[in-house]
Image (cartoon, rainbow over all chains, first blue to last red; front, top):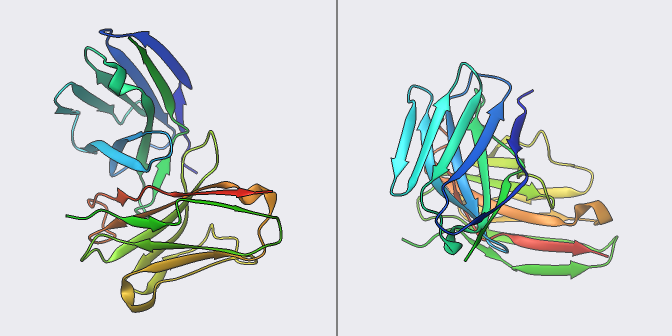
Length: 111
Length: 115
């Protein structure tokens, strides 16, 4: 059974600092990995999707890397802003096409 | 393009009562998913539909939960009777197909509180 872990569970940084969010998974036979953002009381917004053949994906201030062999992905957010405060979830797509989610990292960016 | 719509946004019920949630996926999306997200946890898939057929309901507690997707568009998830541990956010998502490359788009969710 695929286990997805996100550490730390919560993170607080001052505005302008770079954010580094970690995701690890136990089974490297994934099709892709997706990072989501969840605001309080809201659904999930997809940030980046990395296919299993890719090493990284970038969108604006966001960069996500994937190391399948070690079962790890990292989401980098450059020059954080108070608007980046949210919960960030990673999810891996398995052979049966299901998404298996981590519990998320709750980020607070202090002005 | 309109996103995934869900209603109601919030619901508070007593245990042993019944409740139903509604989802309207993105137009043209064949695959629809219902997830349960308990506070502090990631979403867990309850059921997946491809058009109006069930693809996977292995994690749906079938003694109390039911779901249908008539005509392959809207879907309803029902809980009857509710238990305290059903308190969670219920998320609906859709994708153009159920294939491994296809991105899922999520609705805002329904927050259920069972007292």
